[in-house]
Length: 242
Image 1 (cartoon, rainbow, N blue to C red):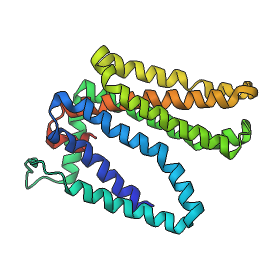
Image 2: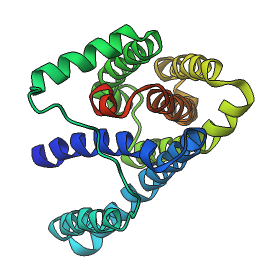
Image 3: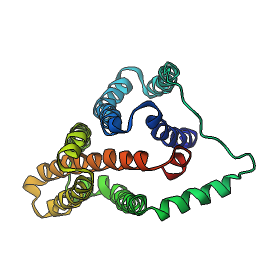
């Protein structure tokens, strides 16, 4: 698990920095929407397929298929035939110096600084929330495992819808209003989660509504935030900024 998550960090930073070399700037928001849509679709299908595989084949074999899927992903990536121009590297540069340069560049740009602070607050709050979310649904709302599975699956549907809507929303209302509006929607729609304990008869619909709307909002925000970073950052800085 430690190795997979460590490698995932490298992959996530690299692929977001790679997309601008494959697409023109006016195509970035659409490209990021399609990438997030595929991730959201897998979030819907994956848990159900994983549960079925465990029941039919057992957990070890299910994990084996998961490992094989990484090799399949790597194979697909090798088929990208685009000519990538690698950023010119200064020979005497040190990784600590590069980190410092990346942070300085990010902090000096008001848009990048604002996005970084917003992302940091969303992630901080989100992980505090996730640490107690399942316990809250079990102990306070008394939801059974089937209901909790339904809640988590519907979040994937909201994420898929958000990824699809992100580009049209940006074209219609502009990037800044969509970024601000999606974060406001994310916060407001989360209020139904703590309020659900006051209305036990409709607790499940309230939690499902929050799950769908919050995932929808955060995907709209994420697609447009990534596009802004890709559009205003020089290639040699993208990995560090991400």
